[in-house]
Image (tube, rainbow, N blue to C red; front, side, top):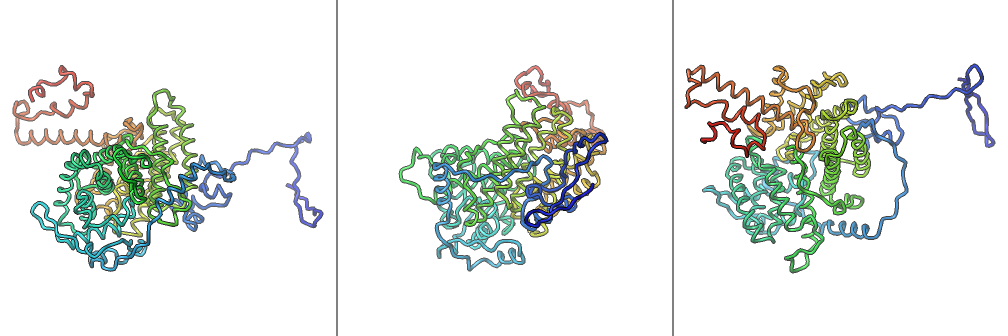
Length: 611
């Protein structure tokens, strides 16, 4: 196209291009300019060149340099910067009150005398923050010995467990002010919180005491819920804190059915509602004296922690969460991020899960009047909300980044149910595929920086399992041609290796996840798994992992029954004998039986009526 050079009045050079014309002299209409959707959202917002696709699943160069979360979203729309509007006075006053309330009361001294075992565990961890300081009196340095089920636990081992909690665990869930973490005080005033902290760190510091302490904590919870909650409401706050910790770092269990985390979430939420943590600024019915700022701070952070563990556990179990959160109670990050980085990061994760819950309320649990074809439009509006939230909370830590990816994956799954139009399902395949691989990349990066993962919260393992399961379902789905199947399978293999590294004891969640991944591979070989991504509609509305788990359990039970029949036939047991177990008792009976049939005695087999 011809270009003409000219000079303006001030001597600047100008370039002019001739307008292309047709044969009859009419100007040709230029086609609509299309922009590449291969750049990340941050670079597209700034209209800069991006190498995200060349470096994927690693962040682009600019996001890596600026420590920003790198996300590729084809539906992202660039927004112009708006002038900040004046904040209304009531909201501003509330924000100032929140900031003042959360400000640390004083500088605290660092720990000078840390046990030698604790020093060895933290040695060489250059990427971890330094030891967190805590106020300690002279008598706090030597807690008294404790006796549990005939076992004497020396005071120095209790001191070691508390130091480990302060140094490595507390920063992941900083709902309890450090000045309250005193083994001497908690031992007498809040025994459930005392032993819950010990149970969180015992596997890392004193593994020989794990069974004793965990069994004692289970017994304490059954008693504390009745005594402290009903008769001593003033101490219920510490019990809520204790159960929130146990939801984030669960007690040892061998199966999902044995995991009491979801039950503890319900107890903690119910107790918190009864003592008014969800409206902590209101006057309590039984309050006599005015509360201190420290107490208000602990109430706020405890309810935020209760909401966080409730939402994470609900997503894993495929059910709606039972805890709600008023957005006005979430502290502002503009000034607080410089005061306490751990609490600021915790608040960011709460903001992400709060946005996820709002999205689930829109997409996952409709009232029945919404047409499935409208899900894509609603999903796009929720995506816009997440894009705005990401700009607000950037930069993200790796734990917060995992939380954000978890929320995005759950939202994408609502477009992959069978009732959604095929065109909308196809639009969700690539975003889901990218989010799953980013999950695995972030966890790999975490393990490379800090191989000692025993103090990590539970949801890191469950997030890796869910991402691997979804990625596997994509590789066998009718839409597998839209993704790179070889790359996806390589990432699934990497996730299997990461699960091995995350396993801390035989039979834990990470080791059981390895069995599950191997199981669904065997199901695919036997053609016993549905090619649909989300064949079962869960109570949450959509859960790819939950529906796959239900398929796996059914397949596993069928193989177990078949193996029992073969063993009995091999041993010469007459299957027609009345004394021999029969497969019609439990197995297939519950497969064809609905919950309403439990009230209809006529449908029960005669063998079960006599039980």
